[in-house]
Length: 180
Image (cartoon, rainbow, N blue to C red; front, side):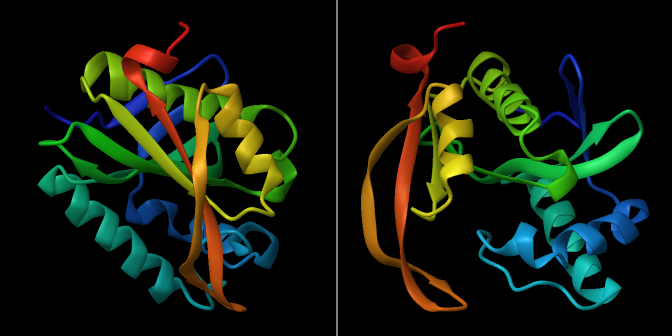
């Protein structure tokens, strides 16, 4: 199945990241508030952002992942996508982040909803997963609004700046959890 280059919602456009997005991506990925719950340190240079976009571009070309820029009114406000797709097992892991000015407006929920719809309706995946640090309440809510259920806590699962951290595993199953 071919990954889409863009997705649309009522208020958002999701477009595959390109090098032209680098200045805004650096600003996004260098913000400690944004990266606090990501598995990256705040970026310090355009070269770091370019390296990340290059990885996403290679993964997209190979059909194993995709990262979309989240655009609202011609402004890049975040990214989201499938971090890893296992076509054989019909599942994917998703991830997302928004600039702080976009928090609390339902935009993360809308962007994740676009991924869920695309995954289940167009890509015919059966399962989506998301890994969330337990203290990231906003992310848990975004997932719950999109019919994800918490499956459990993976103890000492991910390396963060403060050491090994627990991670909550959320999933959405196409036939069981979709209400649309």
